[in-house]
Length: 352
Ligand SMILES: *Cc1c(COP(=O)(O)O)cnc(C)c1O
Image (cartoon, rainbow, N blue to C red):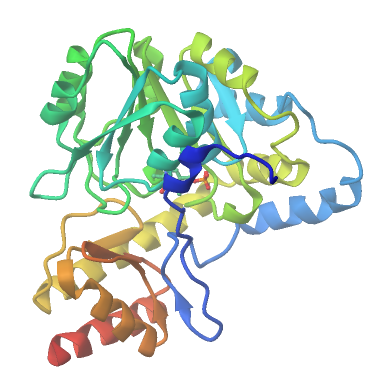
């Protein structure tokens, strides 16, 4: 006899993390290679001697800091162990086995995993030919069993952005008892003036939550802290299903310090945007198809050539994130890292 785990876990897709190859440049996980903001490092150092104490379970000071930063009531905020944990908590809070979760595909690879782990049904809606979310098709996928929709903008891994007008028109047509989760993990890198602001939308609509994270622009991926800004009832449900103490003490102080360093944040995001535009332009000049991107990465829909491209980049000491048969996602790094990637992309076109 051995222990009996759920039979359906055999079908669970594995989350494939971006690889770290010693001696190579890692452009595989959408991290900011500049590192954490200096003031966050100082806060972590200071708090290190206190880690024998449990963290603040209610995440009080960080919640207050977020409430002040966004000018929303603290009741509308829930903090989690990364925004991916909050995504799972939202499925837990809204769905049982009979219920459905709609998400675009290809999109963030955690969506199918968390939906299946919770036990709800998943409905994947293919992207448009331009690698963007297909809002019409997502609306058409809604049934009476739909409880939750993930709307990832900019979309990971394609980088495409929804504009405010199209998102508003979409939200007007979603039934009010379906929760729409705007996954805005890359919000700080968005430079398009017509971009929606999920926090504003979540304040105005009773069925919309905005999810953001300190992992990407703020450079705190290793600490695991993200947050939702949502209608008070949704935020309360999120707080109910959280694993106690899962937002650790160092994450809490580092996030507060990071929020206070908006000037530094703006500067680094502007650098990323400038490099993103340069890399995008040069890839187009090399003859690659590259969709518009508003995140800190570019998407190369290489189809069957993806595995070869991945191998070629690895040989040139650049680690990208390959989705075999579909495409490669490449994070924007420091200028010299991007140069190394562009050199690999250039020599690949000669090989291919
Ligand atoms: C990186 C990412 C997240 C989550 O990150 P956490 O580290 O869990 O906060 C969420 N959604 C998308 C689309 C992402 O790419």
